[in-house]
Image (tube, rainbow, N blue to C red; front, top):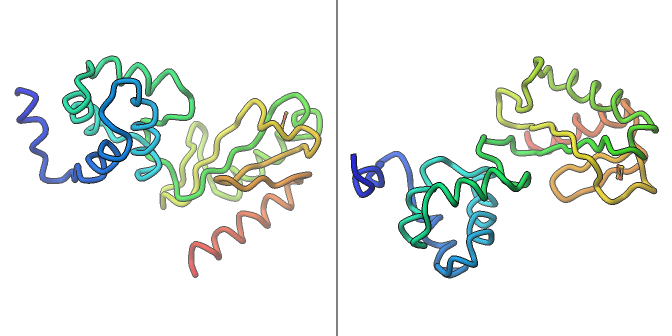
Length: 167
Ligand code: FES
């Protein structure tokens, strides 16, 4: 199967990629911005976009894949509507971030090794520092920072997010 044939995928709409490329430009130096733009739309980088970007930007697909896997902000797996980042850096860890993480995972009924709920509503990740150590322990949901968290506050936050998603 050649490259052009692979692009003919009726189940995948490349219009988002095209829009991002039109906005960011097809200059190779803009590859990170292009990947960020595409991820912003899908909340991850679908496998199908790699050959398309490769063709449009005249960059080897392996190089684009290498960039996407090098930076931890890029994801090749679909993420939930809400991405919950539980900080487990030193300042948060000593203020009991792990019980918060455990409570969140229990509330979301995530099995061992699972990070995204089956309904694609929540993804739970740990991070090493969110740069808000004085507010520790800290949880971040998308761009919102929640300070001085406790397991009970985390459970309330999840309930609020669920209600928000349902309304
Ligand atoms: S260690 Fe958690 S915000 Fe810095």
